[in-house]
Every structure is written in C-alpha cells, then in structure tokens.
Length: 126
View 1 (tube, rainbow, N blue to C red):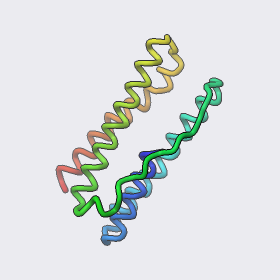
View 2 (view 1 turned 90 degrees about the horizontal axis):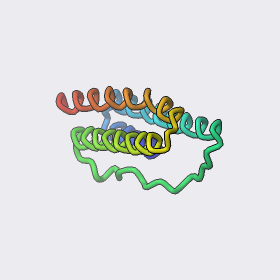
View 3 (view 1 turned 120 degrees about the vertical axis):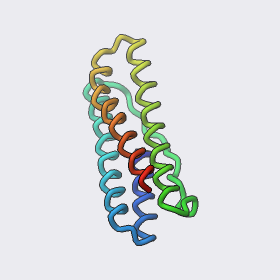
C-alpha cells in the first residue's frame, strides 16, 4: 500500500508538470500496487493469518522532486525496498517451513526482478 501511495504521488507530480504520459503510467502502477496489497490480504485471510493494518508513512512530497529523474530514482528505490521486504517474508516463511507462503511469494519475486529492470532502464533513458 506504501507503493500504491508513492506511485500515486508520482502521478500527481508528473500531471502537475505536464508529463501526461508518465502521469498515466504512474497512476496505472498505483492501481497495480493496490491490487498486489489486496492479494496479500486475501491470501492471509484464506490462511487465517491475523492481520492488523498499520499507519503507512506519507509518500514523498511533491516538493521533494524537482526533475523527472528525481521521481524515477525514487521509484527505483521503492521497488528495491519492495524486493527487500519480499525477501524478508520469504526468509521467515522458509524458517517456519511454510511452503504455501513461499509458493505464494514466487510470482512476486519474479515481478520484482522485472520491475527493477524496467524502472532501471527507464531511469537510464531519462
């Protein structure tokens, strides 16, 4: 859900700076990240894993970014953070021998490899 908010903030930044294509891209990514978060909620509910929603930090302020490169760099760092979080979950699941969680996480791991590669490529072009 942090990722969804960050992508939404990036969409707003791009829109306010007349970069409509990048704004639309970021808005679509925000939606995708929210769906990913809800997928985790659904999985946890199916497994009777207790859930407790926490306050999430505010996304980067629009004033923290001055160039498209700043935004894309922030997005790359976000995706790297997502990767680290997923790896921590996988490590915990492995330690508990919870192979269902490991199987659930596998598509997300591959998605992160692709996202970091894609965002890194876009950042290089920007």
